[in-house]
Image 1 (cartoon, helix red, strand yellow):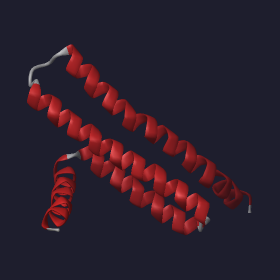
Image 2 (tube, rainbow, N blue to C red):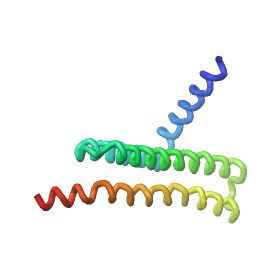
Image 3 (cartoon, rainbow, N blue to C red):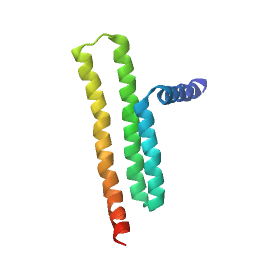
Image 4 (cartoon, rainbow, N blue to C red):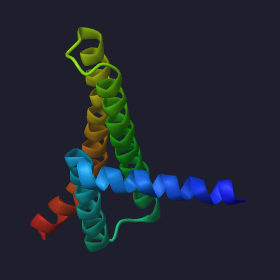
Length: 120
């Protein structure tokens, strides 16, 4: 049982590292809070909340994996290397892809509401 709880301790330590050292993770976390506030303001429905929460967790998770992979690559090969650059660029692309999908989802959910507010 002790190992089980230690897993949580290590996970929270990892989260603390992300919050202390990773600017992009902090940006995505801030964006998540902003979209959550916007979701409350516009009173989105349960399905829309699921979409927001799922894509937000995908982005934050992708950013965490990207950060971990970058740290690993930098540790294993501190000098610039074309293969390491490709690995890091591909990992960063995963965050970009999920962020683009998030913007599309947000547009689908919020643009009709914003348009409705402008019309009325």
